[in-house]
Length: 322
Image (cartoon, rainbow, N blue to C red; front, side, top):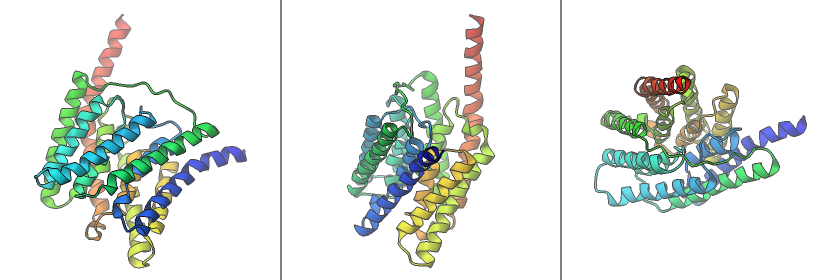
């Protein structure tokens, strides 16, 4: 019984350790770009969740995260448009790549959009993304070796059918409109990169999370609040290192997903994103996350779920008729 309990705790403890190492490195080296929020999402989906959240293997995960991180920095450096246009460009590239990646791995959407939204020009960002993703893969392989997690065969998937292309076009159009309003009003985190990841996942056929919209939005919003409160109390009020706030926030986030049984990878990134955003938007951040998550859930249900469920029903009826 004790061994079973220890095995359950190890992935959670390893996630906290990974966040601590990442944040401490950023503070010691005075390199904020080392903090890669999406790494917490990878940890939730590839280490904490008992069944991995995506159809992907370590090699493709590493290539997609690193390649998109590099492309994001390149967009900031070499594309001569304002941030809104650059975000749309980054999201569009990510959506096209998603169709032909051979995976259902959506977190790389954040890897390319985040540096654009934060206007990151430093090569440190993709280097950190590469190293941290490698560590997640290493932890995952160690868990397999120790029998903490069971191996799952990776079978490449292609998401470039006519229906997939329609879904992609609708997602891009939705983000163009929502991001336009978000940037116009100054509430940019309504389209926070982890929410764009969530939108990509929620709008996929068969996604079960969108069937629980209230619980989903509540968990996402609660994790953003945990991140903000942790940073405010430990960093702003008490003057303690950001590493302390990141550790506390990660523990809080993991507690929420454990008891809610909602192993949604984007909540990890949403929690960590609160560690690097400007203090000026810290207190509106949870409100923006609430509005953004509510919008993507509503759109996922209205524009995608009904049409996708109808298609699934029709295919089942055809098979039954045969």
